[in-house]
Length: 93
Image (cartoon, rainbow, N blue to C red; front, side, top):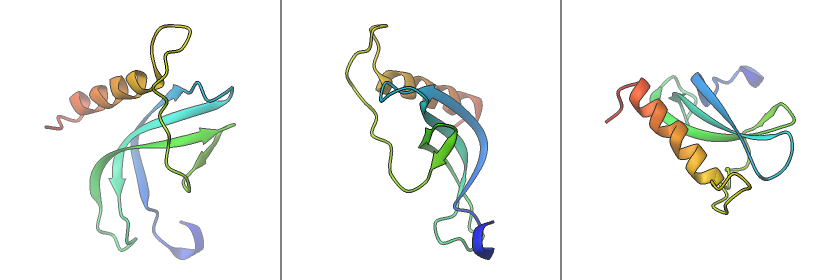
């Protein structure tokens, strides 16, 4: 809890996905709870954050690349695969 405020994000499960943005950069595909007003009103959600050199960035939204990498897949398809996995794991309709 920073500065006495409740956190916006409470992670339950996180899948890191290597980004083609560069080395040591990951998308963090998360299931957990969000509380935008930080008043204890938790809502279940799937969300994507960015991680740079081990540090989670909460300020900038992820920009999920759609270009194909050397393996023939895009960051977008890899992130969506993890979102589908979370959807199944947590029985989200």
